[in-house]
Length: 417
Image 1 (cartoon, helix red, strand yellow):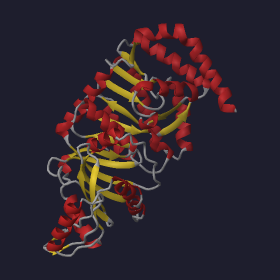
Image 2 (cartoon, one colour):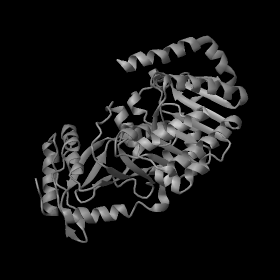
Image 3 (cartoon, rainbow, N blue to C red):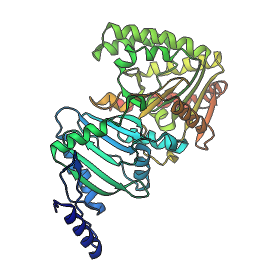
Image 4 (cartoon, rainbow, N blue to C red):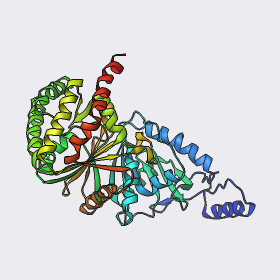
C-alpha cells in the first residue's frame, strides 16, 4: 500500500488501528529537503520481517557492486543479546566482502556485554565491522545499504526488530546514507577492523611485544612457546603461501622477541579444552598470518619446550576452559585475543580459509581495553576454568603425558585414512 499525502497516511493508519489488523500496514512518509520521499508498506508481522531480512535484504547486499557498505545505528551488544534470547543459530557466511559501520554504547559495556560483543563478531566473522560510540545516534534505529535501501526499525524490549519500513528510492537512499554516515565521527571510533599489512606498517605488531604482562586467549592452535628451530619450517610455509623476504624477516625477528619474552615476562594463556585437544590432534596454528601444521615430532618438541620454559619462568600460567558448559557453539569462538594492558587486538582464525572478512580487530578505546582485561581476568574464577601454573605443568605431564603422546601418535593414523 503506497500513500502520497499526510492525510491519507493518518486515515489509513487509523483504519488499520481501529480494525485491529494483525498484520499492520501503515505507509510512512519520509521527507528529505522538504520533498515527499519514497514510501513502502510497513510490516509488523515477525514472519514477514524475518522473510524480508533473510531474503530481499540479503539479495540487496549481494547485488552491490564491489564491497557492500552498510551503516547500522543499533547497539551491537543489544542485537547479539536479542539473538541469544531468541536462540538464533549462526548465520551461513556469504561469499561477499561486507563492511559495516555499527554503533556501540560504551555506557552499557560490562562483563556480560563484552561476551555478547565477542560472540557477535564471531557469529558474523565474515563481516568487517567498525564500531563507533553511538551516543549521538543510538535512537535512530536505522540500517542503510549504500546505493540500495534504507531501513527504519522499531525495536521491542528484547532489542529485536518489531516493525520495519524500507525506502528503496535510489536518490533518497543516497541522501540518507550521506546523512547517517556523517554521524559516524572518526574520533568516536572504538574498534576497527584492520589487516596484517596495516599492523606491520604501523609498527603495531612489533611494539605490542614491548610490554611485560600479557593475557592471550587462543581460539585455534597454540603458536606460542615454540622451539626456536621450528622457525625455518614456518618460513618455508610462508614462502609456499606467497609471502616474501620481508615476511621472513618479520617472522624471524618476532621469534627472537618471543623467546626473550617467554623466559622473563608474565604470561596468562587461556584456551578452551576442545581447542587444546584439536591442537594436540592436528598441530595446526597460525603464526601471525601463516597457517602451519606441525608434524608429530614437532608437536612433541613443542611440549618439551613448554616444559623447559615453565622451569625457567614461574610467571607463565595456563587456564583451560571447559567449553562444554558454554552456552554457545564452538563455531562461535572464532577470535583469538591478545592483550598487553596497553594495546589489545583480536585475530580472526576463520579468515585464513576465505578471502573476505576481517583479519584483525584493533581496540582503540582505553576504557574498552581495561574492560576486556577485567572480563578475561574474571574467567579465572569461573567453575569451568582450571588453572595450571608453570610449576604444575611437569606434574601434569608426569601423570597424563603418556595419554597426550598417545593422542598425538594416533592422529597420524587418523590423518592417513
